[in-house]
Amino acid sequence: MLNWTEIDTVLLDMDGTLLDLHFDNYFWQTHLPQRYAEYHNLAFESAKTHLMSRFREKMGTLEWYCIDYWTAQLGVDIAVLKEEVAHLIQLRADVITFLEMLHSLKKRVILVTNAHPKTLALKMRFIPLHIHFDRMLTSHEIGLPKEVPEFWQSLQQHEPFICARTLLIDDSIPVLQSAARYGIGHLLEILQPDTKIPPKTAHEFPAIHQFHEIM
Image (cartoon, rainbow, N blue to C red; front, side, top):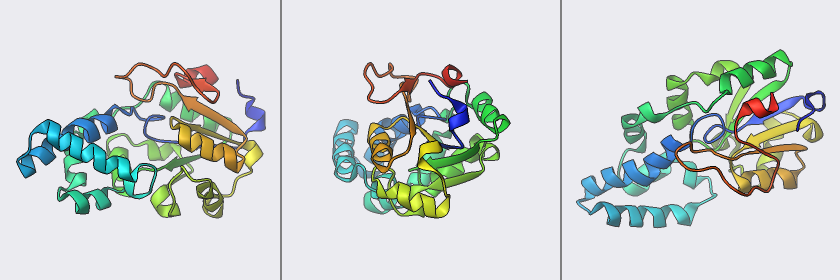
């Protein structure tokens, strides 16, 4: 599927690619609505319906990923609530072996995530993946979400790369579409970002279930 001699830079997403998306899905769809309901004396389903509507309004924007924004909007401390379920943060299969392989091949390995810096710090505290990266960048540092092609142009100001010799691995179709429009040459989709949910049955890009398929 990949000719590693044609790749110099590997851009890796975090949530759903390196880490199991179950933590994030559980937090936003179950834990936060539950705690929000408690704080505001609401039924769980009413709280969840209200929150999901609010989230959809910001989907794909930088605010959607900003826990400071949602803390201010919802009146609950998102960072503190994430700590309550941090035990659910888990690696996906083969991740460490894959990262070690990339370094053995002398690739430059960059984390590019839409996660808020506080969320990134929390996850690196539980699973110290930072030691395997040449650099880690969040969309908040860039000032744009990965869903817009301008993100990749701005990324190059922080971390120069040659599009034709760059691989992006991500679980998000809108992000992969954005990268494709910008011209990134090698794109891979993760088929089962949340291990508690069945894999996607259709995919738009070359796709893998686990990293051993490209090792």
